[in-house]
Length: 636
Ligand code: AMP
Image 1 (cartoon, rainbow, N blue to C red):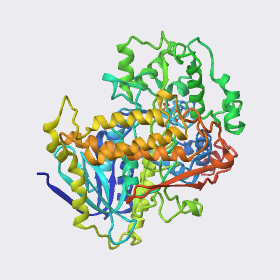
Image 2: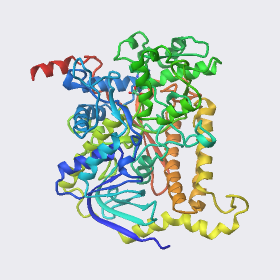
Image 3: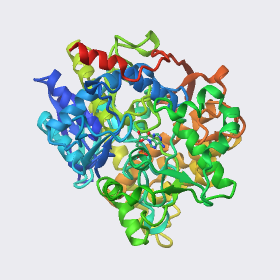
Image 4: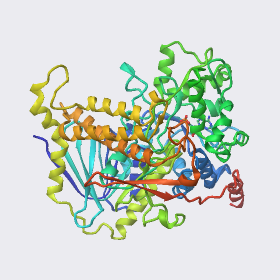
């Protein structure tokens, strides 16, 4: 094949994927490594890549310590409650104590943050959320990363990490191909920060036909954050904790600004309040300490996101749908009406267009909501990702192995969706995680941990052959197409994706089974996934470079899905009703499962090992509602 091999050597910090996590990493690496060689490899173009590409109307993680609003500890308590106890408190605390400074920087760089005219503080949408004019959020932040990096390689689909051949379990770079030219790119690097995306489109989406590309999370998020790490043998955590979102129907418009700022609420199809009806039965399932409807009136103990989903799903299944968002009251206020529309125009323009196209005016009609297909990600109200070291000063020994945000592979770091157990980071928190990872990566290099790295030409050639094999398969068998795209010798990426989505949906608790699964179903799912992976390995065909991209995205989605299946099978309880249900273990079981789940896939054999890891509560229960922050501010 006529594709060139382009080698970038002598890199200190390689950032793979530059959404908010990756841009934070590149920016901070320059601060701690003024003379270090920092390179970004990005599948799209960093000006408009990652989950924030389309813009955001809010920054959902801001403490406001400067204004005496919240302490980092409060945020840990909030995320812990929301995730039914299951978070890495050390990592969350570490992010929360640094996140405000990242937001202040965004403002310095030109991001328009709204301010409360009375107090001068940032305009709050909710306790943790501040409002922004954020259509250009990503290009603004990307500018800082571009100025920090020595080189930015856009349009590179990174397929594999390179491993050091002098020391086992140490990373040495990455490889991939340019999705426009097809050229093979080799990045030899002392450290790698994986900040690629979580996974959309591994479960069959509700959208079909011409709407099929419309999903909640970025459609291009192909699970590379997990696929790359799993292939390299990094341990993963909480991969069962996939998320289901309550969203405006068909456009996936977010509900946060509506619930929190516009103070809208939901009703069933008959105009009735329905949530509280489900609470007594839900308390039986999860225990009173996880659902305290009385306390939920206080802002610091909201009803966990998954449990709100549970009420929604149960009400619909009881035949009283559709669930509607009551917007007709709030939209009588012209200011709130404007905010309601701006909210979508700034970040989910498709929802505004869909309403316009289907004559939905939320001033005169309460729009329908729906629950989405599941997504695997780690920065919204869920915490899938790699098992990473925490910071030295807070982490207990089991959570600390030398370098903050380093995975269990040496020199390999994560940020954003890639790091597990850290929900509620959102955009600002992901950027902050990137900064923390980059600081640690620079220290790793300065400590001499990357000395003597060697990657053989054989490893580089082996990967090259693997990467382009789907093009070869197509070239050899193309003349045997029997009809349309059907060929007895191969599958194409679309066919493979359809198979994956169907099996995840039906066996791993997707939409069509109302998010319910059990051990029998999961085992069948694993078996079918193995067959799909075999078909991928033996005969996935790519007609062109674009299909080659789709083939490798599918590979990362398959790897991600396998981890989801394995983790879901391992955790024998229903920890997050409303995200998924183990039909064979319908209750939350703190006696056996007040633990984090950790997996490793052996890169040689593909075998999985699962273990339980201790869940440490580092932050106490005592809510202080920003008191300490206020005192600190006063003392200044
Ligand atoms: P979303 O717009 O749904 O992505 O959510 C934006 C933010 O609002 C996130 O921090 C959510 O966790 C939070 N949020 C959304 N809906 C609610 C709700 N009903 N109660 C409390 N927090 C919410």
